[in-house]
Amino acid sequence: MTIANGLSEQIELVDQNGDNIEDLFGAFTSASFIIDETNRTEYSIGNNGKAADISDGPVENRASITCKPETLEILKVMGTFDSGAGTITFDKFLPKLNVLNGQTTDSLRFHFEDLKFGGFNLGAEIDSTVTIEFDPILAEKGEKQNQTVSVADADGTPLQWTDTTVKIDGTQFGTTESVAGNTLDRNLSSEYGLGQGREPVENIEGRFSIQPSFVVKVENAEPFKKVLDDSSFPLTVQDVRSEIGEISFDFGDGNGELVIENGKAEINTYDFDEDKDTRTVELSFDARDIKVRNL
Image (cartoon, rainbow, N blue to C red; front, top):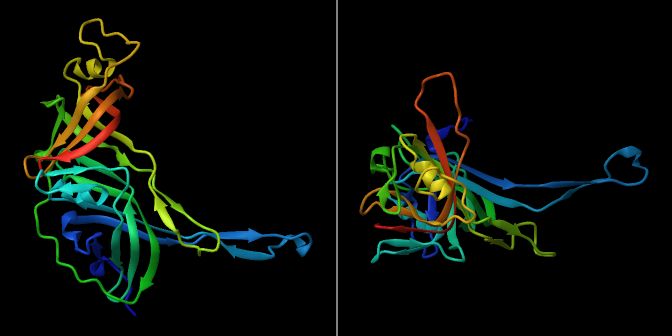
């Protein structure tokens, strides 16, 4: 018997066209797979207070993946990719992909079918590789199979912090320290039906939640001007603020630019402290639209 370790782990993704696209993830940082069984305890009058039965509840087939991509093309798992225009649009309905396999040992794998990627978080910080976390990934069917996954090893160069430019309305914004936040969440949920088994009959997308954030070093009043929507001193609270046209995370032509459109900003608390460290503020956004261009 051999105890499982990470040396045998592999991930395979087959899209709605039957094509293998796991190479678009670049290098995999981490992943999780679960066929999530639930129980329901049934009691009865009498029975000395002990359970009369343990019933079976709904099953959720769920995964998450964190990767270090070479470009933003991997985001097409949640949208429509136009290779001619170099764009990805995020539509009302999510794509339903065919298969996701996760190899756990040399002969065992998780096998998920008919799945949707429900959200992603873009992450970048100084002296680090850019990451994208996909969570949740929900599938209609899940199995543990005695089979193997055969995919090519990752061999490209992932996006780096030095590739990343944060812009507001097309102009680089200050000195940015990190990018995080819930970039896009489609509020995906598993739906079930009477007499249709314990696995989901479908995974349904909900509202768009677009809430990126980034941390910027305080150099001047620009972060506060953007939040308050005021350009002259004193900066005051407006009854109605205008939306910011674009907040974008640009990785260069061919690599993609993630564009957040029609948003308003908030600043988390500005902290005073006895130390003399560099001061930063975190700007978080709520926005109405999102897309990728320049692929």
